[in-house]
Length: 382
Image (cartoon, rainbow, N blue to C red):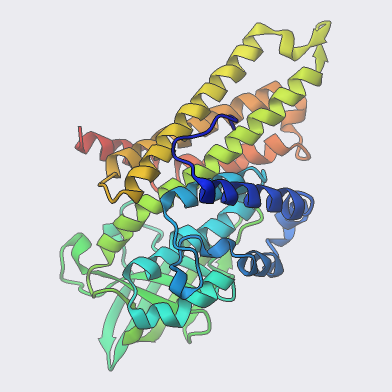
């Protein structure tokens, strides 16, 4: 990261950056290799909650700090520098993908009931939107919620749910009006993990993000009380579309941190690695490829921070956020490709950080809205 001061930063954001970086370097980097097999320990998440990292976006009256999208980007960027994408996404799914459904659309009673524990890490969350046949096409979801007594009964399957097997509470998108057209009949429900009929049916093995829990969730006659409906009935699609903006900014903040750290590691490597009579850094083609990568990271960071700033100003930033998701997701993949390339054979060895990061970064252009979907969102606004 450039040492030059960003126009988007202030004292609060600088403190978040410094505190997160110090915590990651002290508590995460030395320990996270073991988590690639065992998953992120709950005590680590509890510790982060106790220290206040989970409350950046939660209002002060509910135990948080009440900051905006820029805080999420800074936090995600510093987590990304850990080089362990599975750890980072475990945290971000809770703080920036799931909890905002409650902070933005929940009732006062729901906020008082759950937010303090979410801020403190006692309640870990996930978001259940994606299904086997519905990813970016949210309107195609098939999970149903039918009125029954003073609540709803949910049936369906959710796929690729990060934190799905370890979350204490999952926000489930379900179709409450089967006759409504596409997006108009979807609602969001808070479903607690011990609810009868609700289970993580299987853990999913992945190319990357090995330390994160990813599960298939099954809901079989899962009854939830009416007070677990988030916001208004049949408005869930619009809540999802709104929160996608924050999700995309956060996970691209993560991608920025990962690509920046990978490039730094690669610069260190090529300055030390000798080939053809001198360090690889002496080869102009390598210096220039890495320089181009840094220029693209810097451009992506400015685009991301600007979109987050617009969001914090209350502006409609769908086009800008879509640009961030399309540009940074692809850029990070290009940077990690070069980093592996310039590590040579070591870049293909599992003990090398860039090998793990190369696998982890592949999802950056898929999850949270594939590049192609994002480019269409931009095209609609040209």
